[in-house]
Image (cartoon, rainbow, N blue to C red):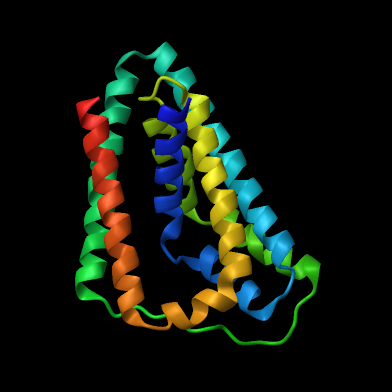
Length: 199
């Protein structure tokens, strides 16, 4: 189980590290100390649903169309290589830094509505969770363990980001921290791509 769970965790964690709109929102809520638990829970549960759909869907397709597995294998590896290259390029060029968002307090309902919109209306989240994680999971002997690893990574990441925001803010105010983070993400992505291709 661990041979599938751990790569799933690594891929899920690496994909979610990029500071997109959803992560910036979670970070903002953490910095402000507003509705942190509920925001983290909604993000983690949303990822779990999407990952489960991706893992289940790709396994059904692989059973019905034998060629689908090869397409997902090479397509997933190509995406990992591209994503890794993008992260390494960002590490090389640098320039990113965290700026805390400002604004007045908001109610729970409005906060969760914003959180759901940033999650479910983002096309990138479907590419990461449904397509990429689903296709990579199909290459492992225990698909459900792989998907569970990716889902657990989301839970760990979002709660760590939400509740650790105040600690992380000074660190990620420095561009060097983003360069190191991008370099780690890029290397993990390339490592997973190599592992996929030599399996």
